[in-house]
Length: 306
Image (cartoon, rainbow, N blue to C red):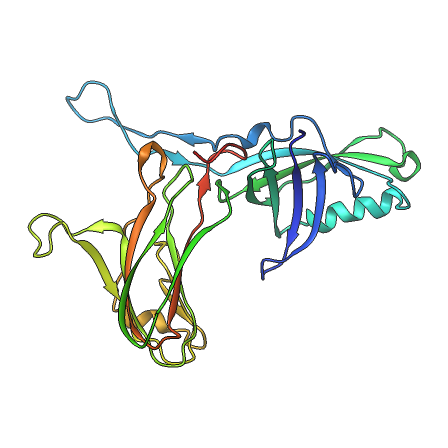
């Protein structure tokens, strides 16, 4: 089976507005085709390993790898297709690969069982490499070299989710279960749905446990969230680069956390680890509910979930 590759224009709401099939069984369905060698720089993220050299110490101590942005060149051919002229097709390409905006490259596994995506922006100036000296509209085709950059170097797979709905009014507990099928650590996102009454949730700090010497040594680190009022929708994003608590119509809701932070990411499940358990407790009505989501991060655009 030929590997499916798509270029996608996606809006801020996560809706795909335009999908170009540039490789695979439907390759060129819109007249846009991906050239040979375009994916070769997309397999592994570029990285360097800084070294610390200390006085009187032979050799060096390696620091944590520094992962760089991915910069690569796509070879893309636009050609007259069906009843569409070359100019119509070429305009489709640039409506996806516009300057200054992000768009998606999606790659399926060879058997079509899995798909991963990376977000890119066009950088540099596209170069017309063919036809040489002929108006592309006359020739009916054009070949472009397009430099793109993935500032976030990871490929992302479909999120995995689990959820819990309070079985009745009062206080109840449950254990949610998720694997991390990716190659790298991942951060959880918790979505609290609207309820007819106020609700208060206690959720874990990843897989973290209290250290030796603490009164709760060995127990899971748990954080109790501020009470969420009736009719309110909330979200906790445990990534240190995100706002930790968001509540619709309450732009400063994160201040109620009083500097509470989540510091434990979820490791990959490879090597026999996971799926992982996440205990939660809620006090609220029977309409109180929570969903936990993990989006796996991959090094490569293809592979199998082990």
